[in-house]
Length: 461
Image 1 (cartoon, rainbow, N blue to C red):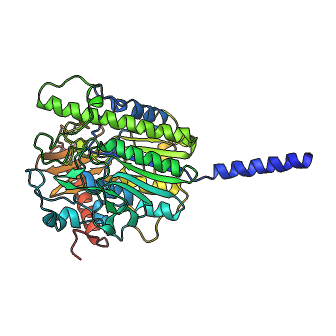
Image 2: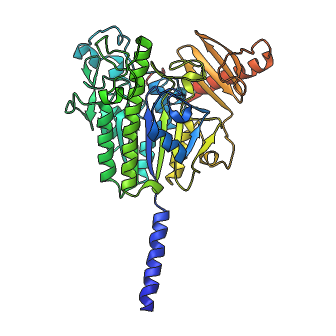
Image 3: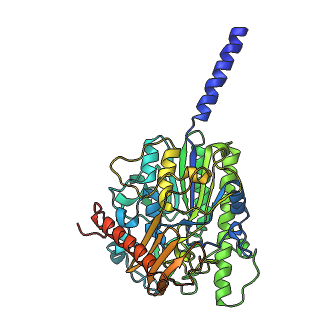
């Protein structure tokens, strides 16, 4: 009997050791065009986000976290590669010109159009590829946006499973982009769920994947299109966010066009919030909370109907409202509940942090632009990041420490973010030496990006 007790004790110790060594599951949730202030936990008084607010209370909330680009595609590619858009080659959207005037592309014309044929360079190594090689089951559900041709689709980029749409925006119910069907299952187009709301569909597929892989380490990239404006040929829908009646009914009826736009935006966010809550509940039902890293982040600043709060600007702009976004993370036992950090951090830090957390190896010969930020989130270290640069269609932004320089058609100047996150007081004339120092840092960065190994689809090589 004593021998049996010793055996059981050793077995229990080994089992505990195996459990402790389990690779953490990773649930990376990305919303689309959600502004800095579009969460209750970020200070909003009008939007209902109880589940995301609970997530913030259970982990950490960042107040100076930046997307790598002020709009969809390059921001998402940077998140998945850990590399600046100008280094990974995807430094603008894969988007046709005639998408806002009601033009219906004939299928043959769409088949040879930029948003159909462009994609992220296949030499780029995505987070999914690294985690798959480390033994993870990998799935992406929702917005892909890295290219529509087969060679660019998720199953060729390290994901085991995919259900979602392949371009930058669709109608939430028809799943069409300006009349073109855009939903895929794995490598094939599908219209199996036409008429059903996208948020619910991406939730359904995520729950299925978690159920199927609860015994494995899994990586789920849950990439909602909410609250992005609908890409519809109908001028009464185009540009507005879409939401089910049950979510719209949670808010007072709007009065006026601006109020209607905000009303639909908030309803879509609240619907997404409930969906995220059900996904988190499923993680708990399988007893996986302790073993699961959960990240929630917006891909860029506020779209139409969104709220930038105290920040100047919005989506597409170099001001803070275009690039400073909400970021929440929960990892029980590693990050203290209720934490808030104002450290200077970006989407470029997510790739190396998650690779390290998974016990995987960073890809050899790949120059990353971020660092493992876990110790910063744990309060054990300050951020290593000293600078960040953004460039889009002739406009640029540069942050160097507390200083931010903006050059754009909408204005610009030099701003001290430690005292002026609204970027309202241009200090260019008062501090010409600081202005020159930040501008020189930006020019050096431009030269560094130009000298990087060229990547498609835009660079000439």
